[in-house]
Image 1 (tube, protein in one colour):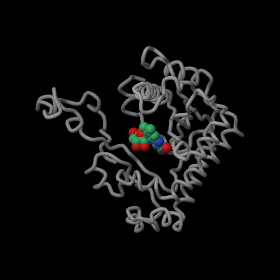
Image 2 (cartoon, rainbow, N blue to C red):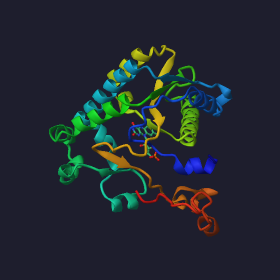
Image 3 (cartoon, protein in one colour):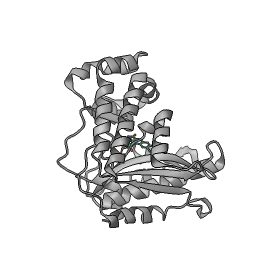
Amino acid sequence: MELLEAIRRRKTTNTPFRPDRVSDEHKRLLIEAASRAPSHFNSQPWRFILIEDKARIHQIADIAGDAMKQLMNEGAFVARYRRYFRFSTEESMAAGNGIYVDNLPSVLRPMVKLIFSEQVGTMLSRLGVSNILGHDQRRIVRDAPLLMAIALDKQEYKPGELSGLYASITLGAVIQTLWLVTTALDMGMQFISTPLEVPESKARLVTLLKIPDDYELVAMFRMGYKDPAAARNTIDWTSNQRKHFAELARYNDWDTPLPEEMASARSLLWEGHEMPNQP
Ligand SMILES: Cc1cc2nc3c(=O)[nH]c(=O)nc-3n(C[C@H](O)[C@H](O)[C@H](O)COP(=O)(O)O)c2cc1C
């Protein structure tokens, strides 16, 4: 697959994968390609754990499901991120960012305003939303043929210090490479971040994966071959929309917008393709 084609097609896969095992060649390609990412002083501070053992995947799924339910019940998670929640096409298009919760049981639709209330955690619990999300998270992780954990060398990953920033930058480069390669292989990929947001859940993962003290667990993903026929989660979202590039970029300094010729130049990325500016 051509690079631009992979960039166009890369997206989060929220749905289940095919049950097939990911081939050893593909797993090897993922790690070899990721290792070509830039890192400060070529330090290569990332280590990868490929998890295929079913019993371990099931344990991780339980941890992820519990963490999701807990985060929703506490309300703080939704409160922290609610500025990114969209509930209509118009809202989503106008903002150009955030996640559009487009798949929601109709009985819950009238309740979306509650997300902005102070008691959001209690409401999500009472309406059964925390249970649904926890259950979906557990199921979707449990059914994945491959999980990948990434850990960073703590000699480099020191939050608050410059080396912490540099380690985060190289981590981003690694993750984007993984994502583009999975896309090229007709695989999908999804972050499983919720257990990393709950300290006890993260500690359970660190123990389960036997991550040593000098490494920090920083990211988890589920991966597998895409299944175009897969059903969506009970509550689900899309996030195809992007801000226009002229809104994202400035020219020579912060105060100056892009010259008109550049802003109106033809799109090499999207020419001949449907631009996913629709949520
Ligand atoms: C650091 C980070 C953590 C993320 N955590 C999650 C996650 O826990 N679950 C999930 O489904 N997506 C997660 N995402 C994916 C974003 O929601 C997604 O990339 C964004 O909405 C754009 O959608 P797209 O990837 O389909 O283009 C995460 C992304 C980043 C960069």
